[in-house]
Length: 267
Image (cartoon, rainbow, N blue to C red; front, side):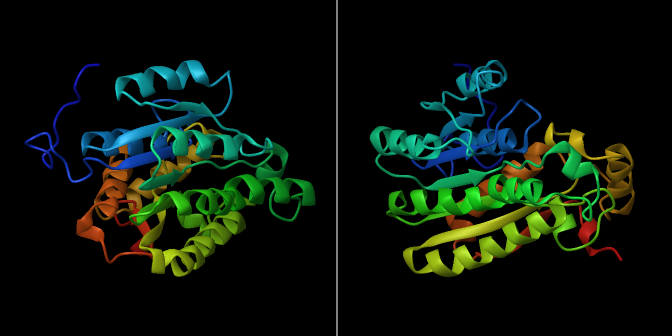
């Protein structure tokens, strides 16, 4: 394995996450937000396990997992019974503990995503809610017993959870539910030392974003509105998440953390 380039946070090679165990769900390719998280955790010293959706996705994910020396590369389709439980059985067998959990998956049937909220079917709404929101709750329930020394959990949201973003459609209410779930999980898990964060990145050219109508216009508008005037990248999100997993953020929990160059503050 080729060593990663040291970051400013790890000049001695011993980062603030050394010894931590992280599970990152949602890596599809090297443009995935989840990959930015996995890479950042690795660079700050954590050992990282990665999941891939199915055999079609595996060729894109396996080289990435290999590049950071991931000890576990596991299939996970949260809509398939038993797969989620199998992942955590492997975590228990391999590590016996877990410190970090990243949920970075979302799905809505294309017709329901692009047809507007009024035209969203009950089946499509339920599918979007199950994969994009409730699966995080199921993961948290399985992860919590492994976080014996406390831990950090993340779910990926978007500004459309709180403000109307044209063409975001059904994902707006779904992400709003996800952010509320993060707050309630932070409350329930806080006494065990587990912190929960909703992360809200600015628009990124990920595979999931490709399903949104007029995404390029959305991306351009976000850059124009952001006080920093720059596009967010996956490592911006990854290092923000890595920081939140360190002792430096030990009293932060339950918030929606924006990584969008400040675009969310604009009227």
